[in-house]
Structure formats: C-alpha cells, structure tokens
Length: 132
Image (tube, rainbow, N blue to C red; front, top):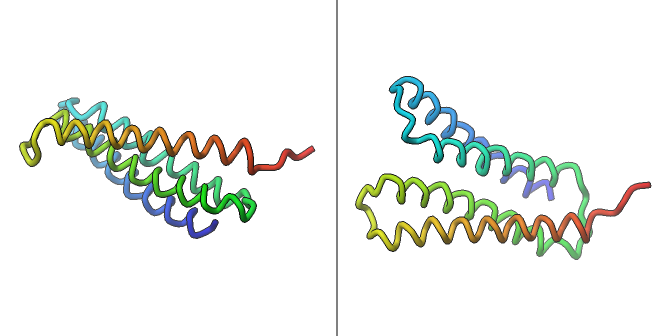
C-alpha cells in the first residue's frame, strides 16, 4: 500500500504546484476567471489526493482489499485530472476539441472521481477494523 501512498503523494504535489501557480497568476493579473478551476485543483487534486496518500500510509489494509485499493487509486487520479482538465476546457473553450468532447471529458472526469469516492467509502466501511 506504500506504493499507492507514494503515487498519490507525487500526483498531489503536482496539483499543489499547479494550484499555487494558478493562484499566483490570478493575484498578479487581478483576474479571477480561473477561480473555480483553481479551487478544484487545490481541493480535489492536492488536498484529496494528499489525504488519501496519508490514508494508505497509515492504515494497513487486508489482502482482499488490494483490488479495491487499486481501483480507488487509479480512479482518483484519472477522475482528478479529468474533472479539472474538463472544467478548464469547458470554461475556456480553447478549440482543441469539439464542445461535446470537452463536456464529456468534464462529466466523465467527475463521474470517475465520484466512483473513486464511493470505492474509498466502501474500503473504509468494510476493511478498516474498529479499534476499541
């Protein structure tokens, strides 16, 4: 599980750097057009992935939960990238893709991230033993 912790930690660091850079750009330019994207990058990408990295470092999961852990980690990464990337494309419409593809990227990323949260909930409710 340490492998998953390290992977999530590295991806969260990238999101943290992107979020901080975006915040600096907004402050320097006095333009807050990136505000929702900046918030999602920091909350979903940096904070959530970081907290899940700590979870996998602290808690020892049972062997039967390794498939769930793998599903959780990879949906977390794909969902975070998809949601924030899709949000950026949908907000600014740079023209790389058609509008339906941009929207599908945004919605698909959000749906994958929602699946990640559901799997995490399942892991915590079924795999973590109560300490008394």
